[in-house]
Length: 352
Image 1 (cartoon, rainbow, N blue to C red):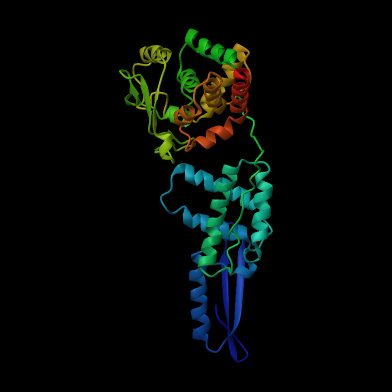
Image 2: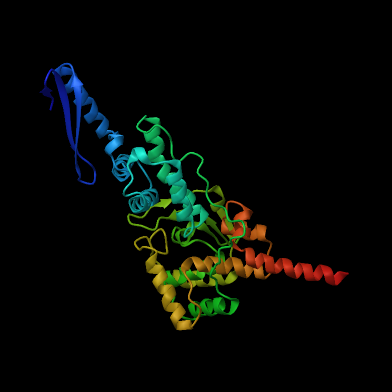
């Protein structure tokens, strides 16, 4: 509400941020009440569009308002989940930063620290989501520079992420346990992962139409999101859409499963449950068989490691796993490939 101060008028704006904090702004020096009132209307429109006063707006406030507007678009469930995770990170690392004060150095220091405990791919995706509102603030003239420009993801060339996988004996114990006991959606999912290297989301998206009984293959074209409400979405990378050959033992268990569950949802391993419903059963089987502790994703590593240890070409393994390029496979299974290389060195030297 505009008020007169001496010979000039003062504009006064009061609003509430998305996190419930009350804010007030004043600006003086308007020659007429109409000019002050017009400014108030303009500022309120800017605030509704996320253009807070940069000088006294916390970055977390701006981020929350931007995210609220961003969610009004039609986004996939997993995309929303990823943004919410990044929002928590923003509140943790930038809770005392004002929007106008954030510098490229601040963002780089965050990335350096974050990358110490997260994989490079996770750091990169987090930076992308963090950059979106800051780039928008820069493009809208709210901040003078883009602090996310030319940020470098630390690349430790000699760093090798250790992977957890089952040795062959433990893998066979779990396969045999499932073959000899009651078949359930959870157990069959574990069985499929060990024999295919598929991701759990890919397994839960399977339909009977995905399986070619004549050619003994599975076609992977969808992925089930891991949070409710579940969605069946196209994989993000073209390489994840693939067809893989399956061994005879898979089809034996498939027949057993069909006999026990003649009526299923279209996604025959279950439409209604989150992924932890399946990981709990893996823990039960590990306890029953006395095998090594492993995550469900570790079953995928087990499949790949088993192939590599038995001399299967890494390019084929990469294609079977649905990696976007062979370098990802080589980097993930560096130690196994290095062992195979050392064996080939020994063979080469033995020839001479």
